[in-house]
Length: 372
Image (cartoon, rainbow, N blue to C red; front, side):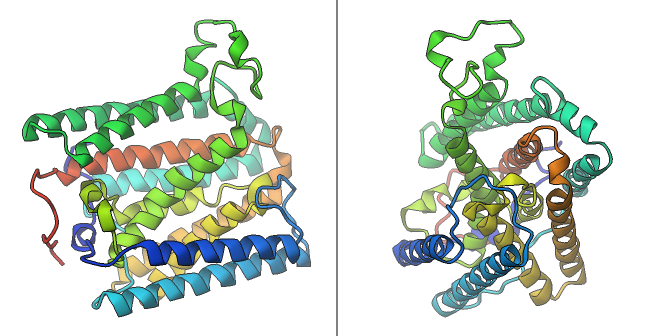
């Protein structure tokens, strides 16, 4: 894929907020989260990360509806704040990349998301076979993560060579490369099964008794991975930048701004839930994407943007409905998470290529304005 094939949305660099502090919004978001936690416990008697089967009763539907309303109200409040504090902000985001190659790649991610969900419906055995260790999903995830590592490593080296100094953005890209390398190694237990390495004594206490670290705290590691790589990076950051919300000291990381078109595949990722549908983070991510897509479809003046948002929203809802209806057909309760991690790896790879397309300039971005 050419380095110029996937480019950051034009509104990203134009969205650098001047002045203000993000602490007010952080405190407001934390207050909303605490309120949701209290409501989950007192009203619905649910823990934030309980591995219970999805509740499809009227009570479960009421709880899901209340979550959708809460996310909608918070999103509306965020938009209102942005319009008051940053005049000229409008809601529609650039969900479609300009490059044909980028559109084809994103289309492949959407198609894969739909086909994988359909595979569970028509062939649970094949769905399980492709999700097993050392099978299709795991190795493709590893390859995509390793390609992201190579991409970020080369990009950090290129920036350092051109600037002859280590700025914050270059260091962050180097750290991103390290994170990709660690994730790729952890995905295949550092090639333990390939080379038939006995599990060292220090690793025998993890959930699968394999040579990896994430299985010592699988639930929390997966929560961090799904939330950061599957939601915060591709969804929250582009929305934050587009609304021109304050950045504070994070302005130096603007060269790493993700493009808004990552919201589409992230919405598909948010729909890959079975046993963890009841998780509070799952509900926030799913309804956050759904409400955002619905809002973009309503506010968009361009027909292509409106249709794209509606198609993604419909696909997202259909995929989640399929997993809720047929999730009990899984041969392992966590098979769906293997495919979810594959889609996240695909989004991360897309992001890494987008960083190349940005063609970083050594001059600071503060004060620069993108083309509208």
